[in-house]
Image (cartoon, rainbow, N blue to C red; front, side, top):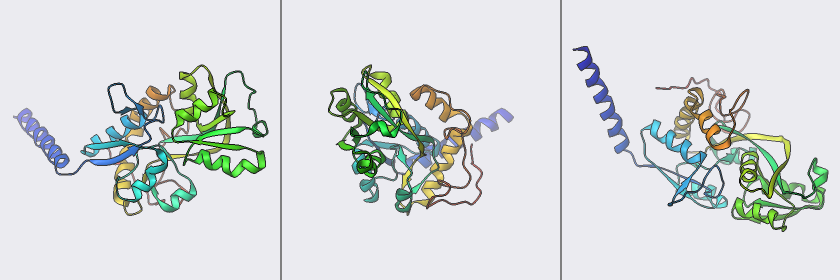
Length: 280
């Protein structure tokens, strides 16, 4: 009798979850589908990568379907603000400027700015080694902003591209002397192309990679952050990091750290109200 009751409860719960999912429209988000290994073209069509696996799991735990579009990064935030997407699945660096305009979840990865160079070219061991060089970047990113801010001081020439692979290719073919991007992306590109080498890291640039929402989406932001925190606690995020980036998070790695409150501590949009993750 107890088994029958338990089976009935499970069946009702499963049906309720399916009904909830069917009664809501799919979540809508977007990525830069050329930003490997976060999102990249898949043989047979579509995109794959860390972001795709992560947000499909987020949607599954929310009982929702999800639609993930692929577009140029420079157009993603305007499309979000125009209401085309509910949030962005693209890894988005949480800068003070962006935090003033958007709501963010806490970081699920750390990002640091790192340079990549062509194998055999002069190494970069400090910012001074960049002096007079042409730096390629993906347009509309914090990497472009860093080069722009430091162009006069270091006599840098900025070369922008719509995709990160094109920015890397510019280094390989000699149009640029270095590419600036996030640490995970530079390392991945170096692992795939023997002519491209991961080089100097700007150690003072560690920031959260979070999920952006419009400022009128506080409730949805909190729901998604709650799921992300549960994925950190049960090891799902660490497993995805190991699968796509090839290392196991430890210490204060954002992939296993549940931050207090909601959002990124210390930035606009952060809610310090204590909140314990609700994980089923």
